[in-house]
Picture 1 (cartoon, rainbow, N blue to C red):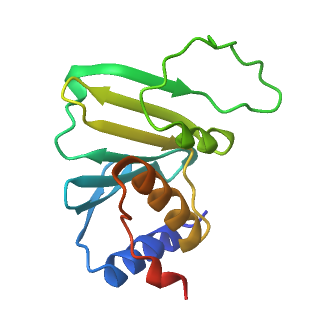
Picture 2: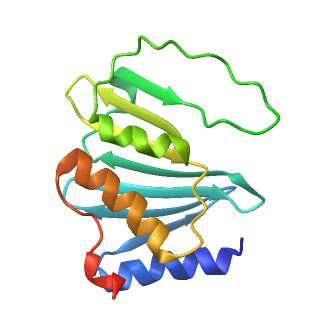
Amino acid sequence: MDIKKIDNLWRFLSIKNNLPVKLELDHHVYYKFTKGNIQLIHQFNPKLWQESTLIIAEKLFQEKSVSQRFHHKKKQFGFSSKDTSTHVQIFFPKSLLRLKSTYEMDIQMDRNGHYSIGLSPFVPKNVYQILDSVNYVCQEMWKKNFFSEGIRN
C-alpha cells in the first residue's frame, strides 16, 4: 500500500466533509478527525501495514478507567487460535459483531459509559471501505454517520 494513496484518501474525506485533519508523524503515522463528541484516529506503521489500526472513540473516553473490554482476534490461516470463552458478556450492540470476520476488534467501555472501538488491520483500498467501516460503527453506536453519505455518488 502506498502512503501517498492513504494520505489522499484521508485528505479527500477531510475536504468533502469540511473536517480538519491532524497529521502527526513519528515512528507511526496518525490521522485524527474530530466531529462532535466522536474522535477518529487512523494510525499505522508505514513499514508494517498489518499494524494499522482505526480507533473510533468518544472524546471523553478515559483509557485508564476501562471497566469492560471485548477483544476478538481475527483468524489467520496457518496459525492456531486460542479458544475464547463463549460466555462473554456483550455490553455493546450485537450488530457490531458482523465486523469480526473482517477485522480484529477491541471494544472498550470506561466507568462513565464512554466507548472506544478499535479495528485492525485497517488498510483501506478506497474511500468506500473507509465510509462503510466508520459509518457502520458510528451508526450502530451513536445513531449518526461520521462521514457524509453524499460522497458515494
